[in-house]
Image 1 (spheres, rainbow, N blue to C red):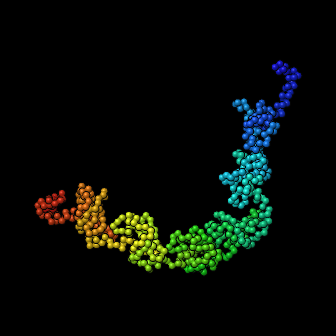
Image 2 (image 1 turned 135 degrees about the vertical axis):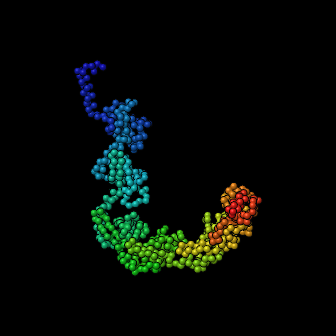
Image 3 (image 1 turned 90 degrees about the horizontal axis):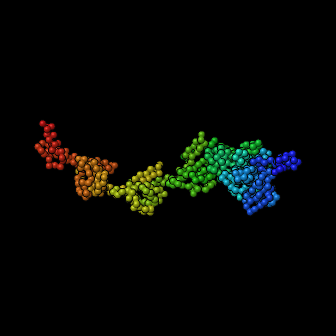
Length: 578
């Protein structure tokens, strides 16, 4: 300790000189990348010697291996590390080789981006929206959007995985530390000079033979020309008729002739047209009449119909909707009926010059089976049919050899039984005798009935009239009233609770146990609508009025009748006569 007391001592001055010179060489600062020399290796850790630090930093050996630095784990090798803390709470130095590598890699990416230079990388994995690319030199990870993988759609990119290749840096986010790269830009740059030479070959008015349909978009269709150039044909240039989407006219791989209508040498683009290869067919549309049959050629089959071209006017394309294919099949498929290039007969049903639209129908060229049915089985005809289908409320019956489904509602199965219960008695294939009730040719509907072939129990009321007294048998009762059956009739009819008795206290169905025979009167009767209303209350009112009329002049008459207020009513009537 004596050496430090005497600062004038030559040894002290020499030590001070050496100390100052050493500190001036080594600048120690947190957040900077420094070099560390490996001086000790264990099973789990690597110890580094860094000049200027009071202790040896430690690195996890697995961290170095995951970074691909296994070859550098040797005594004497130097490894760049990021100095995070000179001294933590435990007095140890914290460093990170992984963070140092990322920072150095980011600096190199920034340098390449500013100089507009390509970088070497390899696609390591797929992710949502694209792929992950690893920078070969630094190991930094970058994002490759799916649209930037190639200049043409690729269904399979397995041949590109883990292959070293060039990428262009198209976006850097310094704040978030994200990088976005493009393989497409590298490919396009090589093709640009060649593409310029190819575009120079085309002139407005040239005809391109056999261009292949490559892809669709909402605004047009892309064609490949001789495997050296892709050209666009806008939707408005595909056909003189209205086109919602190119897939209505073409399939991928179709060969189509094109006419060059524009050449842009700056953008290296060639615009083409399909419709301009033929004259505008709408200029001659006046030669065609509505409701007449013409030949049409099937050019495209769809789920909802077929696109057809007027054979005499190439280029005039129109839709034959599935609803106009057949009379009797609602779910008819054009793919099952026709093939591409088939010539079929169709009737022109509409011509709209302003909208450039022509509507056609194939079924109008066929004989309407509903008209045939009406001639063969007019309304009122009784014939045999076969149940071919059923649902929860009806049967569908086929009659004769016509491929028509007639409709039989469950309410037309029986006069007496519940329609839904009656429906359960029938199954597919059953033969039944039905009566034609209604034919609507325009609506393509035919209604038949089964009960109409049987005697109508309601005919029992044909000779009856309102206020007539009839005898009924009580079948059952519920909270709504009574169910009764008139003697000699096979129909069960209701009597509402309000019609059970004249007096409110007597209007209770519990007075009856079932099986009794009672009299009631007809309150309402409509033979056309098959409606009848029965009432015990009305009968009491009629009998009461009759008693008043018959015994009105007798003193105290009517007290033995089953009406609580009859005597009072008779007395009032006698007083009024005085």
